[in-house]
Length: 93
Image (cartoon, rainbow, N blue to C red; front, side):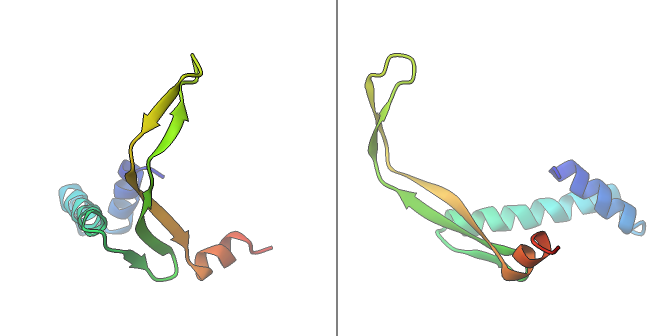
């Protein structure tokens, strides 16, 4: 599901809200999550999972075309760990 599909589904389920209001709410929620992660925090959605930030150290990579070594800088990457309820729903038989 992409962001526009989420907004369309929410609009269909909440006819009393305008499309613009729903877009604003979704934007604010994602914006706050991004801000929290940018500050090094953690975002937990009970039953769904938790987003956090992990650090990756610098390393020596390889140029796939030439095979030459290329330095790769250290960076921060988002990490998602699914919640127990989500895992159980995905693995239900």
